[in-house]
Length: 170
Image (cartoon, rainbow, N blue to C red; front, side):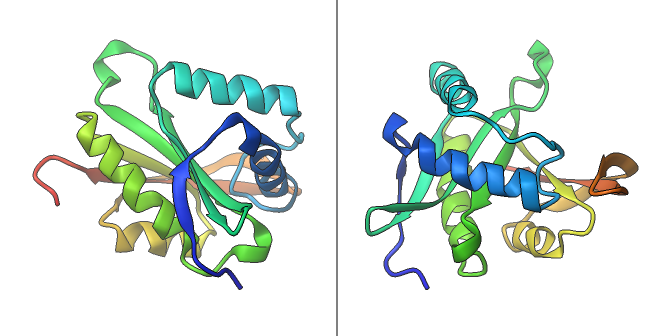
């Protein structure tokens, strides 16, 4: 059980914890449509790409332990998509179900709004009802359902896109 959760900007010192959380998602869930664990070098390159592009990377910590992280990046790299981003959020398996994702996503959405973002996209595995309901609670609406576009753990996976339009929302 988590105590007080602090949300802050990530630092390079957080990358081992971020790597642990992300690799757990790769190896044990369908939250990431990848099968090979990442290396610390991959996470360092990812972090520097995010920071150098002006994208936020936030962590949730309790005590001195990083228990979750979130970020956003380009939805698509073409110029006319510049006001649309896709976000991601991951929580340490020992701390899931405690509201940490929502604590991370609220400030991330506010940062997107402050940065002039118009649309936030969430890509969610079709069976991930927890993530689906989390996003619904934050105002996201399902806008697409791609059937059998991923293959992991010996089965086909559906991908849902949910969208939050930020203009005019508080």
